[in-house]
Image (spheres, rainbow, N blue to C red):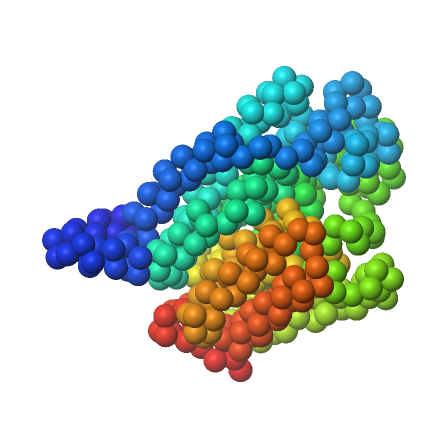
Length: 431
């Protein structure tokens, strides 16, 4: 969306009345770029205020530093790398990133400096999210950006008070999404896999990204992107794999890891025995895969004539002409991640950052009334701020997830000409 449009809309409001100006700033999608810049400036101030007023909370930072300190001291066996919260459970990219933080913060001792660094990363991350909203041309009102910027206590806490690795992994994902939108697939694949190397939750975007990649590039041009993803993981993990291959693979990519019931946000409404039951985990995985299949067949590949035609299409000469519109592209990525969150074996408080910025985008691509969308956002924020989680907060979280998921299913696919349910234009029904 060209910036001149936002300036023009704002100028029109200023020449009429203060009420018209405020209305434009809150409701006119043409003002979104202007409001985004103002919010980013406000966030810089807000983050600095939070760091200086709200006490820092130690949760994982010391453990992160202990884990990378082991590598600094020459230990490459993943089974020997531990912190006070347990063994190292992240891939090698995490070690390199937080190794840099280790040196930049006086071996992890300068917490205030680390917080300011995370403030900068927070603003950069938010700027990329705003830009994705604008580039997608989804015509979402500026007040939606306000709600997802300065209004979430939990997200600011995750970033600048707890110093978790989760939002940094997502920052690489958002940067990769921008590159994909610019048809820079190899570079985008590199950033995507770097995000995975920091925390594996980024893989929740993979089903949607895989479909988008195949639609745009075809089979043969998709292979180099997959090789970039796999090759980068091998390159980053090589020092650890050479020392103890099994130890690294089991530690960094332990898909069967058992989560602790005491920390779960989404399953406090079931008995601990069921939470730990492997059959329950298998059922969640089946529901996850089944829901992905529904969206693949009924929405994501509908414009191309179905999955079979996508899989059998010839490699395009010009991938730019084959790439789905930005709005549809972003929508598929965000839905893919959301499905993974809905059927997750366990969600912890920092996991809120995995989908916080995507929820408004998804809600404004449904046919739910605006008041329901707002209520869902408030209910989600409440459920993620109840500590410790209770059966009620977990139940509220699941109800919100279920409503959003069903609304996305019945909203129809986001076509090339418009978004289903976004503004009433270009709505497509499921076939």
